[in-house]
Image (cartoon, rainbow, N blue to C red):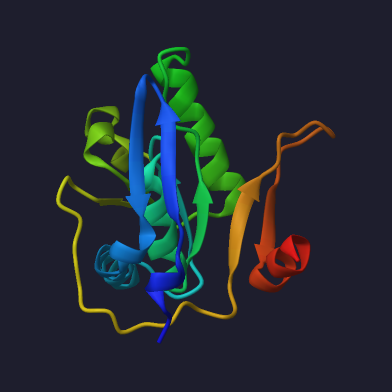
Length: 167
């Protein structure tokens, strides 16, 4: 089984706040999220994540990876974006990357992303489950390119490619 105790502690700084996440203590939450995602989506399904940059985004991303799904982080709505522009951007990313659903927190319920795609809501009390899974050794993540070469596109990176890049 994967040793959660080797995972690092992160500190997120922004919006005048500092928030810590100790991944070594978050294993049961990650497993609970993985179980929910596995129940809602087929193996290898690409799923979008819409969270503010912070602990919940990391937990959702790790839960999607642990469940064997392919996560893609989507743009979070900000005050600088109009609601319509953000929805159009999300729809475009869903189409380009072939996302089968969106995972988001309760702060986006008012934005109604469920009208855009099948959604999974992670509420303020994320699920928790006994640790039982090892992190997959194969799989991938999706990243949306900026489109500087003419068109935005979804780029799939395998775990092997990511490991090679970071070594």
